[in-house]
Length: 305
Figure 1 (cartoon, helix red, strand yellow):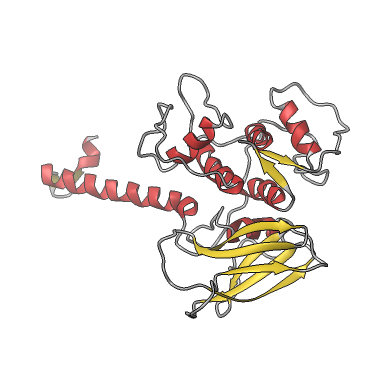
Figure 2 (figure 1 turned 90 degrees about the horizontal axis):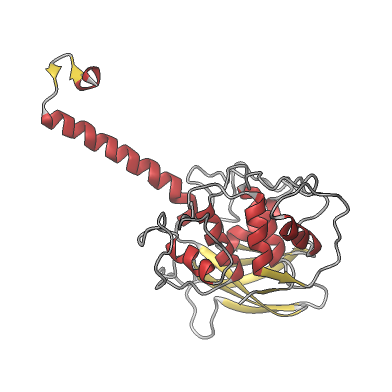
């Protein structure tokens, strides 16, 4: 300790110690801000998709922070393949109908599907570590353009980074489309009233979708495991595809029934690395979460009440 507070000019006084403390505090604040940035994200245009029939959907573009009032005008759209719709927009202000919203229908294409939002002049978002050749590119872009996930400030997505329990709570709630109840107090000792994820966590807890770890502990910064994530998916979503039996035996684990349910619903597929063997304690990555949540959005489904 003595060597830390001494310099070539002798022992530091209280003012010098205060300067060191403030520099350290600022450094910690910067680290925290960078860490939460991928979760919070800057204001950008995202899509709300309301599937009306097998061949039609209403697409509405909004600002992710719901505060920005810059006009959004949908200019055109196109189907790039049987499962992907690109919607183009600019910020030209027009009078008359709601230019930020369009009914899109086509007899040859089936909804739901991936929806990308693209600015006419700047083009589509590019992430340095996620290219169109990446097998999960479509899923990641689908969630990005719906405002469910964000990239990092350095322009990367970092698909192999683990996801915290708090982060997944937000991703799950936004995918399900639940109304966020901001009035619910926290029932967990480690989720304070001013915690950024309190409303997301407590909204899901009130629906018995997520649980703590006992003793009123939620562990918001703990990394979510595959077993925990699949349990939450199984409790939240009901798809219309339910004929995918699992052909392998499983090691004993409390989450096995939820894993089999998600497989049966077609959310986990034989080509996935977590299909076999099932590793329930494996930490779920950002890529894992994007793939599974995108598959929910790409098929007809119900959410539990």
